[in-house]
Amino acid sequence: MLELPKKKHQVILYLVDANELDSKILEQKFMLSSDYEIFPFYSGEKFLTYLISNPAQKSTISIVILDYHVNSSNIEAKNGIEILKSIKDIDPEIEVIMLSSREDVDIVTSSIHGP
Image (cartoon, rainbow, N blue to C red; front, side, top):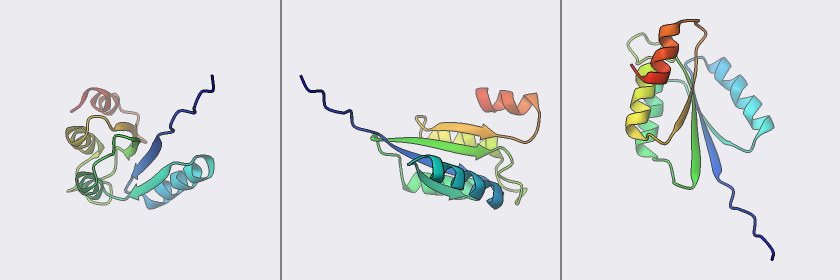
């Protein structure tokens, strides 16, 4: 019996990083090595606004690469842990990969277990 190919899920990758250069480097790497749809955001708040207005579809896999220091250009903005909590409040199914340039156990613990 002929087996039909399984329907491939669309993967959407959100890059949330205040550092535009780092974000563009990641974007280029993923564009060259995957068929993901990629959306860069240079502030956590702008990403949250987008996410609320554009909820993920059930047929997509949504992944966020989130920099802990997403508030580096605006100290009044939420940091990566606060953005992570908001993402999970909006849509707990979204997978988040947290990036940090700091070797801080508290950041790692907060990223895994929540603030």
